Length: 321
Image 1 (cartoon, rainbow, N blue to C red):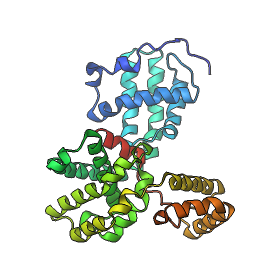
Image 2: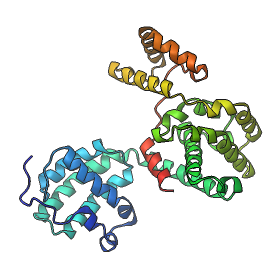
Image 3: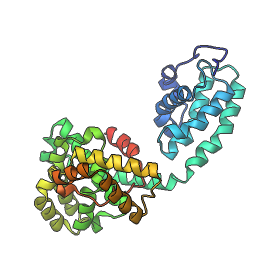
Image 4: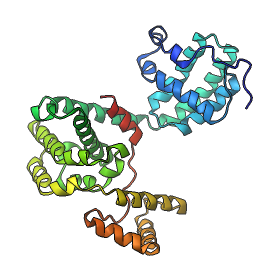
């Protein structure tokens, strides 16, 4: 697309993000202002809608594409139009009236497109807040305080991921946690949902310690009915927990999942998934034998189900600690 009349921005996003300009925004708008301006700038480039000063048509096209290019919570999309309105006003953008009209036109689609996730996001935020309270309490314990900075981050990741899988994924509060539930997530989706950078021996070596610390803390708060059984399970499965990640097997399941998507397999249809998996293994017998003899303990009947919350959203929350 051709460039607009002005070939340079009158104000860069960085120049806009000053205390004076941010003070005019609400707390939610301030929280997401940097992400919004960076995302919108990148989205404009991605969909090839020119450079330089904005025009109304570029605004409409860029905001229409934005939800397909970024994974953000509903409250982020609520803040997009107010932040861009303040941004355009602060730089006295050319054709300001047309730009503001375009923003007003784009807002309903942005907000309504994500309105259905509002309740889910609110529930998720509640879980994050709860887990943060647990972590603050546990971090006063000497054995946690003495961890290195990197190990503390791994500890946070393990606790967050475990709690979110149980509470948000399985809809199971700590009082109802049991051996079957914890086993199903640790030897199921836990590894799959970790960021690739976290899938390292140092994190897995910390899993028994992190789970033991979490279970003991919840027991002291009278929130964990099955505490003794869960602590015994961690002791019994110590070796399995610290060695459960197999990069080769993880790669295999990613390839299998991709093949299912290409074939249009409904992953909620267990019969279809099982049949496809058997056919896939029959078509790749050597690979299958190698994988399943390398680590029989990690053999799974079918890939982990997709959970109802965003991995990126979890990652962003944890990195802010």
